[in-house]
Image (cartoon, rainbow, N blue to C red; front, side, top):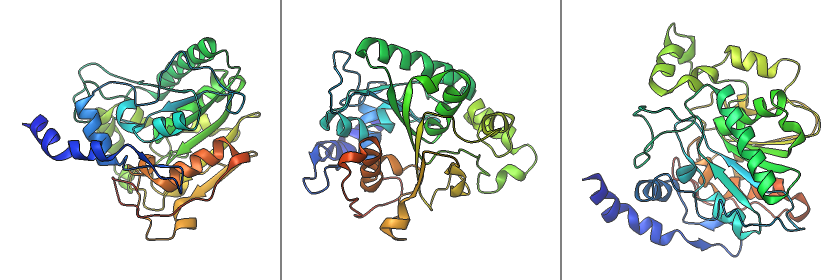
Length: 306
């Protein structure tokens, strides 16, 4: 029944979602709804534009971009908009699924196995191995990382504890819980972090304010030398609360709030950020500041993006 729903209702979104806006240089139509349809129809496949292992980095973009999905997400869904956009811009783009747990039933419709549910330190080791493979097969000395939610937080463990600072030039994080989330204040209630971990995976407990993981990660400072950081957050984040928890302190850090430029009517929240044209333009500008272009603030909606 659900496949019939996808075919009859959501497939038209996929047919609509292949254009590039000449004015903004950002893919249009690749919304969160279209991403969900794509994940249902093509589960567990790399997003368009990603994982071409014959890709040779160009002088204009010498660093491959590795995309890191969020909690209870996967590469198919999370990078439906950004992967083809980066490939169209001439980047070598790579994505992977991490932190999976056999038998877990939560996750995206159409996904055989949700990702990002294992303890974050274990997932960081998976990222380290994937980055090593990308560097080896492309011949690149360094990569840039772009992550959503946990995908923006987890790489910091890799950078700080697993030697990743020598392999990464820039970490661009979309709505990451860098200093933890209060889960709309629920984390203060006894037993709530444990219940969340039981239902959504051990990584959720690691992301709650005051967790042992976060205390160790943030001890001695938010950043490591030699790596640039860009954080892109939204005031309407309902997952990372307060939204300012996303921001980092330290040298080589740029913190961006979408509504600061686009205004309060820009309604993208946590799930919509990877499909938000303004956020995607900020990503492109962060990766290639020498060719930065103005951010276009169009219609942006919760979950769907803009």
